[in-house]
Image (cartoon, rainbow, N blue to C red):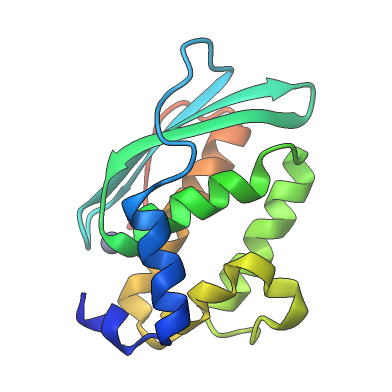
Length: 151
Ligand code: ZN
């Protein structure tokens, strides 16, 4: 948690709020798509379930155990992509990836994900922050398997 202490205080609060009260936590019995994600460097694991309506993510749930950043990221990702199309979700991932790797400073584009901009200062944490997104991509692409950030 040392890294978190160095993040901007406001952002720290946003991340801790999602960590303590993760949104869309749970599973979907009748899920259309599933994928699991594993980040061996930190030990983060999550299972993602999607309910699709055509190309739209109608519902999304995740379960798992991980550090504050991976859990908060999964929570915020699930909120962000619910009701969005496959393509919109992938575009959101690209923006998020640019933000956490420091390739974009966020700006207006970053929106609710701005809290993760500070992660770019801690390369090892980038994998924690992007795990949920990589898992989402795998689920959307119909890869019903466990993806690893180290593959
Ligand atoms: Zn982690």
